[in-house]
Length: 415
Image: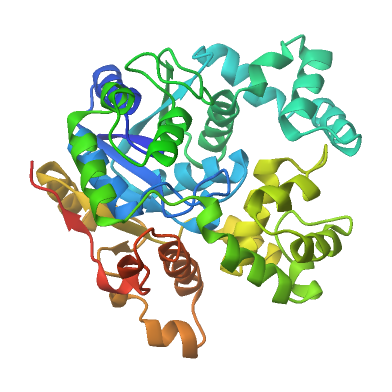
């Protein structure tokens, strides 16, 4: 049994994602699709608009056969670590032959050239010089590529192109037998904020959902009918949407009470940023105000948001460095269909890391709070804490209870 893998967020699942799944199956020739998906917090350093089980169900009803959670210690990270976590997890399954990803420039030759260039000593040195000058990662790399390889810097400014390059770098390093497939994103750009065609960006869809909190004609045009029904149920039950602003009070409380030493240990914090975070948290009344005070040329909104989420979850630089060396230590199953059930039987034999369908088989809430933890349990613990924090952003108080991961096993979605 061979499957094509996709590394995704589905925030939320829309028509472009469904097109991507069909393209992945057609081009790869694989009958099955396995998705590695961010959990309750995503790469931009924000809570996902809907919880991970709901988004996994959207994906299964949209054509994916099996959804596996990308551990939080890789999902709330910059492109390099996000891609490496996803690729290594797919590789560990032993059933994935291809990986399919979208890009604005779906030219594999060009993307591979850029990927190779990022390992070139002179290019990397130039990039670091540009970073020290206060440029963002994308701008610093773009300038170095233009200088050393005459590659237009505009190519690397797109989020999806950056991820595509990082997927290729990770495949080369961790999974050289994995066959990459690049497909061109359909119509809308990653950060488009309006819905004018059936292929809208997830950003635009989230904006409609948070602005109107109901099913609009725009939304009906942009997502599959199965997703639309799930969203309708969520809105009615008060399970979403969840935004960073919904977690503002707990985030500010956390920043105001965490020690400066602990703030200094947060991933990506340097040059005294921890002092500024503490000072600004005492002055800010909401997330917008906090980030407006913290933002600089070096510290973009996205980078700052990731730092704030790591503070909320209690993850540190040293912890993430250890996890980066080890890679994903388990495959946490969120949802599957009938084909996914067949895949799970095969994965029991082929997977090189534990398959987790029920969290309490590997970690209980009591163990999390009282016992020394193994590396696997520490990684899994961060996922469970992220769910506990995420629930506090739910619109309805009845959904703000914690311990979700200890109560909800993998879900079978009959089609």
